[in-house]
Image (tube, rainbow over all chains, first blue to last red; front, side, top):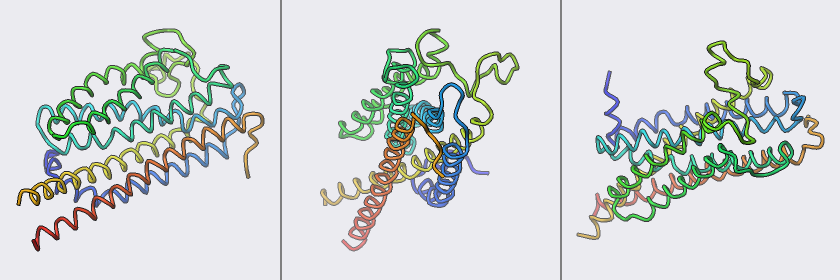
Length: 250
Length: 51
C-alpha cells in the first residue's frame, strides 16, 4: 500500500481526483436530494417552532462544514509549513471559498430562523459573534491569497493567518459551553453526554434526526467534491503560470 | 404535495431560496473555473510542444 504523501505529487493528485470526483459528486447530489426532500416534505412541524424546524436541514450542516472547513485548512496549512508540499497549500486555498459560502448560509439561515423564534435577526451572542469573526477570517484569508504575487510567500502568510483563525473556528463550536449565556441554544445534535448516557438536555427528535444525518452526509460529500475540483483547478492554474512565465522569458 | 408551512411559509422558503442560490453559485463558479483553466492549460501545453 502506497504512502499518503504520494498524493503530494500534483500529477498523481490530479489523476486521482479525475477518478474519484464523479462518485463523490454523485454521493453529494444523492444525499442532498434525499435528505432535503425527506426533511422538507415528509417531516412534521415541531410543537414549539412550527414549520421553521425545516431550516435545520440547511443551517446545521452548513455550520458544521463552515467550522470543519477551517480545521481542514489548518491541517493543510500545517502540512505546508512543515513539509512544504504545494498541493496541501493549494488545497487550503481551494477550501476557503467553500467554507466562506457555508458560513454565509449558516449566518443567513440563522438570522431568518432567529427572527420569528427570538424576535431578532441578530444578537451579540457568543456563538453568533464568534461565527461572524470566523466569516471575517475567511474573507481575510481569501484576500491575502489574492493580494500576494509570490505563491510561496502567500502560502506561508495565509498558513499563519489560518493558525490564528483556528481559535475562532473552535470558539464557534464551543462558545456556548465556555459562556453559559446568549440566545443560541447549546449543542443538540453531536454531544458527548448523548453517547455516555448522562444526557438530560433537550436534543433533536428522531423524526428530524434521520433526515438531518442524510443532509449532513450530503454537505460533507459536497465539500469534498468541491475541494477536490477546486484543488485540481489550482494545480492547473499553477502549471499554467509556470508555462506562461517560461514563454515570457524565451 | 407542498407541505403546509402556515405563518412561517415566508421564513422557511426564504431560508431555502438563499441557501440553494448560494450553493448553486458556488458549484457553477467552481465548474466554470475548472473548465476554463483546463482549456487554457491544454492550449499552453500545445504551444509548448509545438513552439
